[in-house]
Image (tube, rainbow, N blue to C red):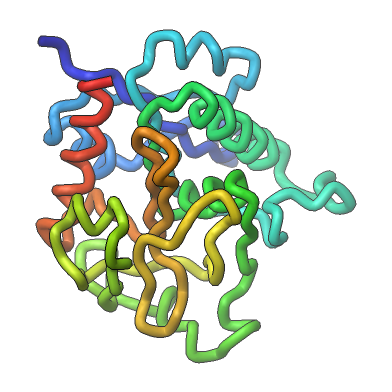
Length: 238
């Protein structure tokens, strides 16, 4: 039986040394998918190709990145011209991709920036700067490296995420200055940090629709591995 094909949204940056745009992906994320039995491929930011992508993919992962827009809806039409064009293109692509994947009900997983994009797509917002709301929220950014746990999250009882990880609490890494304090209207919170920051969201009306603020590809706990295994299994079954 073939491995399920998982499309991973690429990050993009303009590298001044080459003066060219470059797509790239987190190696740990691709390795986590491969270890769970998937065949991961990067997706260029081409909105007009979304339906072609989804015609061959078994699942989609909206990845994180080092840049998201400092606006609750990610793109502020009044200031979009001030943002790097390649980042605007990425965000528009990912929002359109999430919508089409959700409509087709393909397995969908979001990580970090992808979690924030999916919350917006579900009718929610992001907080551009957590510390501007509460100074003590700085710990979500000024924490340990990706390979180390920064804090615990409290898993929502009765959530599908709870069914997958089989635990009420689990340690996670944390390197984000933006965040979510309320799940989108079409989603629900699947895990919260002890200080109230939303750390995971899900949609129970979809086959597999889930996202985490932390980076589970670094396998801080066995629960992270369970999440990847469940996602890939859903894609294989689909």
